[in-house]
Amino acid sequence: MNMFIKSIIAVSIATVTLAAQAEIVVKDAWVRATVPQQKATGAFMQIQSTKNVRLIEVQSAAAGLVEVHEMKMDNNVMKMRAIPQLDVPAGKNVELKPGGYHVMLMDLKAQAKAGDAVTLKLIFEDENKKQETVDVKATVKSLTTMEHKM
Image (cartoon, rainbow, N blue to C red; front, top):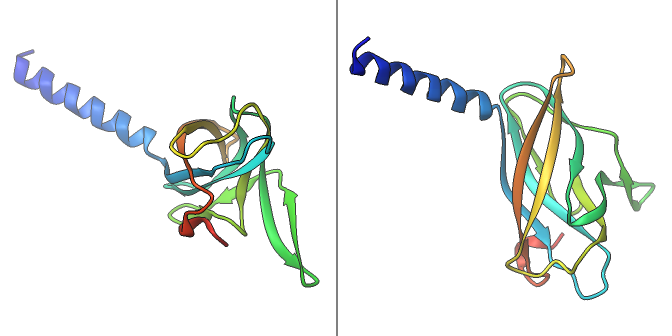
């Protein structure tokens, strides 16, 4: 096989590999900064997928416990609770934001300081129970940044 054909095959394989890895895209991931001795904070992001998936788990070495939570009004009271999974419908943007769905990082190992990064491992499952992991670096942002306020 000549070099031209080998190059075309290599580029085709690389393109297919990148497309397979890009089925789930996580954008704009950030974590709210903490004050000293604060043991919990939230992580926020946007998730899109080319197929129906569920976010079933989030892991981070920065925290002893990581859960996906939802906040919603219940009889005029804002309530927060852990949920076992978060559906990400194909082609839809699912936003994790203050006052809505978010990732809770609890039992923090250290203060989350503005400018730092927190590594998150998001584990998704499709309709056939096949799991896919997406590693995310979330930037820690200041408590005083207006875009973070509810």
